[in-house]
Length: 206
Image (cartoon, rainbow, N blue to C red):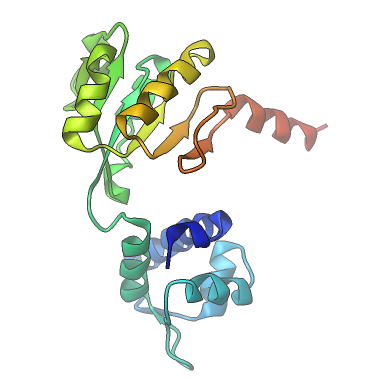
C-alpha cells in the first residue's frame, strides 16, 4: 500500500498511539484492550481499530493487543524503528533550544548536523551535533542522503531555504518559520506556529 493512500490524520494518530504504548511498556504492561488504548489516546475504539487496519491485523479477540508487538509494528510503519537522520537549519534561539532537547533520539530521530549562515559554536557548546555553514547544506544532504529537516530560519528567508532543500532531495519539513511554504505536492510540510497556538488558546481564557 502506498503511503500517500493513508490519511495524514491516521498517521498523526499512530504517533499518539505509540506514545501511549511506550508509557504502558515503561509501566511493564504487557497487553491492552482497544478500549483502554483508545481512551488513553483520546479517540473512540472504532477509530483506533480503523486506523490500525490500514497496516494489517493486530490484537486477539478477548485478549487485546500485545503492547510490545503493536509498538514495534507502529514504529516500523512510522520509520522510527531505526535511527532516522535529521538536519536542522537555522541555529538561532529556537534552533539552539531544539538542539539541546534530548528527546528526539529516544523517539528514533537523530539531528546529525545543524546549519546556519553565521554559525556560532558557542550557542551549541557541549553538543555532539556538527554545526556547519549554510553553504555546505546541499552537499551534505546529497552525500548523507538526508530526507528530513527541521526549519527554524526567519520568515523572510524560509522560502529561499526551502527551495534549496527540496532541490537537494529533502522530502519532509518540520517548519517552525511563521510563513506558508510553497513546495511540490510530493513534499510533506508540518507547520508549528507557536504564536498561533497561543493565540488560539487565548480565546478560551477570556
